Amino acid sequence: MMAQQENGRLSSEDTVSVMTLGSQFDEESSFGSDSEINGFTSSRQTDKYGFIGGAQKYSTESAQEVPLEVLRHREAKWLDMLNHWDKWISKRFKKVRLRCQKGIPPSLRGRAWLYLSGGKVKREQNSGKFKELDSMDGDPKWVDVIERDLHRQFPFHEMFVSRGGHGQQDLFRVLKAYTLYRPDEGYCQAQAPIAAVLLMHMPAEDAFWGLVQICEKYLPGYYSAGLEAIQLDGEILNALLKRVSPPAYRHLEKHKIEPILYMTEWFMCAFSRTLPWSSVLRVWDMFLCDGVKIIFRVGLVLLKSMLGSREKLKACPGQYETMELLRALEPHYMQEGFLVHQVLELPISSRDVEREHRVQLKRWRKIHGELSYKSPPRMHGAHAIMSAEPHTRQDLRQKPTIIVQYPLPSDTQSEFARVKKRSTIRKTCLRIIMHISLGLTLSTGPHLHRRLTAPFFILADLACRQRAEQLYSTEGTEKK
Image (cartoon, rainbow, N blue to C red; front, side, top):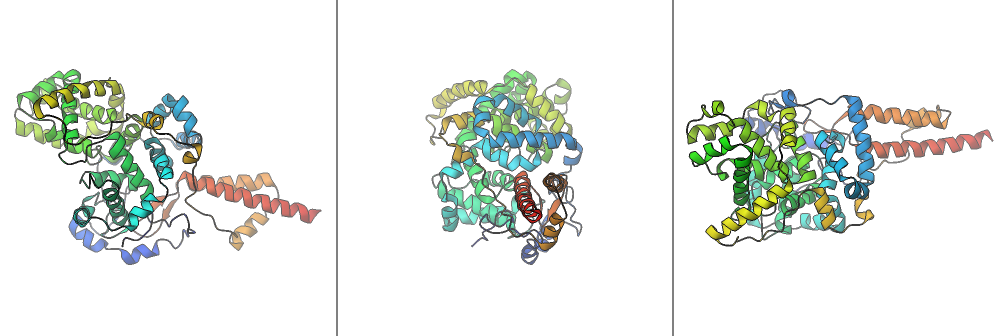
């Protein structure tokens, strides 16, 4: 059975030991076998996203660096939003959308995605469900397919590079659990990269509920047998392209290039296997906030950029050349700054998508008859999901995932004992926390480098304050 660990972190019932956590992965490592397959050298330098040896070769160039002060300011705003999520999502959603468009701070992205998708509420309302599914044996038919797919998911990312490593184990657990949760759908290969992206930002249980929400609310029917929903969305994309870029539309029609030929991976994987990573993250921030219209916009921007003028069309006079062009998109058009700006400028709304969906569905029924798979209605983003699903404040409360063990080490106690005033103690604690947040990376073995996230800062802050209160009260008693 797969090891019961959450992205290399122990479960919330256990105490985390930062210094010794990584040793177990050294013993399980199979990096040598992976290097033969993936063509790695002995050098294992990673970029800030965890990709090894330049696998995301456009990431560094395309990423927009946010000044540290701005990032800290945004983190504070997001922490306030997440702690009062119900109020923000119902009364100030335009502000939530604006902050998603600016980019979610990396330290809070996993938590924000879980809240935006409704996965947090789903998890709380189904407490223990993932653990139950995780303990069950999967259908051998799906288990075999999933196991064959594991090494194909982001093989250059440090989390998934090792066969049988923590990343592949958690990926297997999430995908197997979904086949048990939705046996009528089973497993589709395009679900694996979706689950992998989620696992890069959150524990397995959270990633599972995030996957459930994406499959059921954002992209319903995409992963069912027959792929009718993705074909229908291909026709919607084509119709919207006619409005956004007539030259590109006419060119594709002239050469009889069906949307399903070029947009399937784009849409089913939410561009996670197409764009440089900085752009993927920004697209997902907006997608989980505003729904599938963002996926349509990205597809339309890429098609318009690549095929939207006569000069560009001269380079692809036939079907073969056009398909090759769409398989090798120009890096400039995928660059974070360019892409996000164009996506936000494109006047395609959720109403436009739904209107065209009705038109294309009516046309589909005339040609093919009724859809064989009745998928649930599509939800257009976080506001629609939260409005449609009843929830309580308890469902939105954040539960700690890192437990701070007491008593503190003796050297830490002596350090605190030297501080005389409560205000000084608090400032010292906050300086320590800020130092951590400014960029300390936990190295837990050669296969895992995890940035401390904001929930850790909160817990550490709380722990320091509580300890300070104890020392201050003790010091006061002694003076008396």
